[in-house]
Image (cartoon, rainbow, N blue to C red; front, side):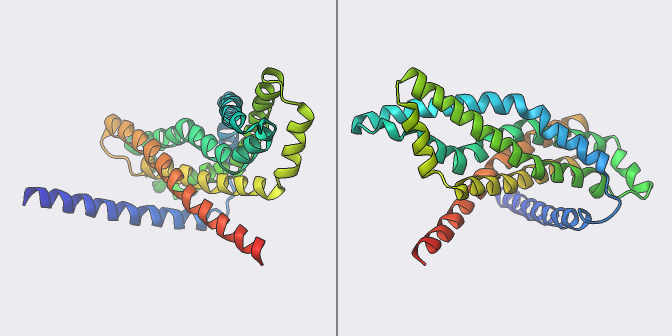
Length: 264
């Protein structure tokens, strides 16, 4: 009976969190297009999510492209098809690796910060003070962070793509001796603009999920300093898992649409 009670509490808490998350999402979508438009807060968050994340994106992107080129050359060498390494790396980066890895890196940096900042404001009653001053906390705290993440993530993904392909070029052409003309021509022939658009579309959805989870966990923080730490950890773990889950369904959706376009 005791175990059944614990299971019931877990299920009830999960259903409650899903409901609260849905309500917050509806509030964000409603308040995002209502005045006052707090441009200064939006620009501050865009600088935090975008500019301050460039270093980790550059480092991660370069070595992702370099390592993936090495592994691809190792596999293609068995079939004497090393010349295809450029197209394989570029397709993998633009469609899958860049949006997923970029968003996971930003989740660890920015999603945790969002949860910690808003969680600290919650436990120190600053959120209640905003409500007392007739300022909607969702509009003031959550909307700028969500919009900034959605706007800046495609930019970071494009940077990831460029630096990742540069890393693969360095490994394939300068270290492994693959002809640079063949390397670049394969990218030009096999990578379509649609591949880039798919990756950018995924990144916007991932950014929305990441920022919403971080703000949600921070907004409903309880238990003082320990609660802030718990909310921060939960925000990173939950957002990372949700990004991977959503990625599967988005990939399936784009594959279905692409197949229908090809066969129609």
